[in-house]
Amino acid sequence: MKPTTNIDIQKIREDFPVLHQKVYNKKLVYFDNGATTQKPQSVIDKINELHSFTNSSIHRGVHYLSGLMTEEYEAAREKVRSFINAKEKSEIIFSSGTTASINMIAFSFGEKYISEGDEIIISEMEHHSNIVPWQLLCERKKAVLKIIPFDENGELIISEFKKLISDKTKLISVTHTSNTLGTVNPVKEIINIAHKINIPVLLDGAQAIQHEKIDVQELDVDFYVFSGHKIYGPTGTGILYGKQKWLEEMPPWQGGGDMVDKVSFTKTTFNSLPFKFEAGTPNYIGAIGLAKALDYVENIGVEKIKSYEKELLNYSTRELNKIDGLKILGHSKDKISVQSFIIESIHPYDMGMILDKLGVAVRTGSHCAQPVMDHFGIDGSLRASMVFYNSFEEIDILIDGIKKAQSMLK
Image 1 (cartoon, one colour):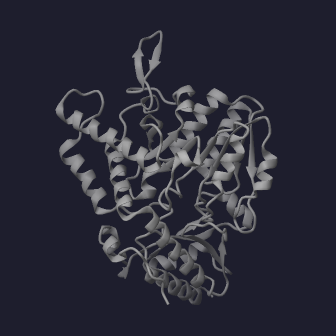
Image 2 (image 1 turned 135 degrees about the vertical axis):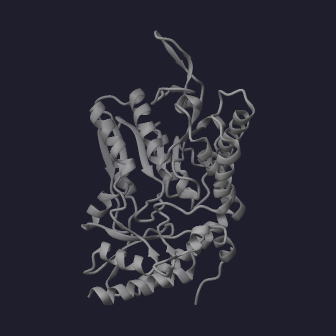
Image 3 (image 1 turned 90 degrees about the vertical axis):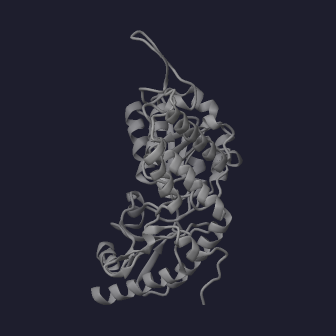
């Protein structure tokens, strides 16, 4: 018996044109939302409207179109501030995505606060974009990178985390939610532990922002980053939230137009926040498209989305566990609707290729989290990541496809 739902799935699916098509003459079942989400028609229409009628570079123009676009761009910043409940609009920095936001902090925070012998703590379950920038920083500054391990359920071992902290710890950067295991980490506890000894915390929210309500003031997090394309917005957009006290002290990480106050060949002074960190012509149309996506999510209701996706998770867990030889990776008590799994004697790529021919889009490989694969002693896994426009019937199609592929690959 299928669970009941509190949102109108069919009505929602009508808003996403890509979901109406067939692939290989089969109904498209899109379960690759962890990589990128599809875009509702309202976002597509807004972007087309801006390109068609309003396009003009922002901030420095005195003409009509520039004024209109500047007004919409700054309204988008306010939308993001409201969506994550930041205290000040100036604490919202537009970037090209989570990766760019983390690199921005790794460079700028690193230049200001990291010296030889200092320590940065991340976790074993991080996406590569929350590993490599810190490795580069540590190489540049001769600092030390420490790793929080996770257990057999895919949960961070907090007792081990506490042991890693020392008087040399300068920053803790962890994923809010694992893109591979689906684990929702105890970030409030991590922040509380860190703040007792005045250590700032960065949260990678790329896989959290679309699944639950984020309140940066309630979390008391120092930095929070996410990508627009993970929350039904356009690619090439992202957000860096930072507490004003940090952003004021940190140097800019890129130089160019709009981030300057005065420029001469002897000295340059920098613009105020948030513009100090937005060098060059920004992706203003993308930022406005992101704001439209946040409107869409709010209109449905974040709590309704979270509740329904929990039903998808529970149903898919039950049905996947019925399949002989299938092992789900990650059994944390708090988990989003992401299922990474391996199937005995079948390579993930082979399974993924057959599922594709059946119309089912899943992700195969390491999911940009090779240390997670190393933890389990595997090369890769399949990942089905579900969101509120997915259905229980689509899960049934996935299950039938796995069974069919098993029979073909034995």
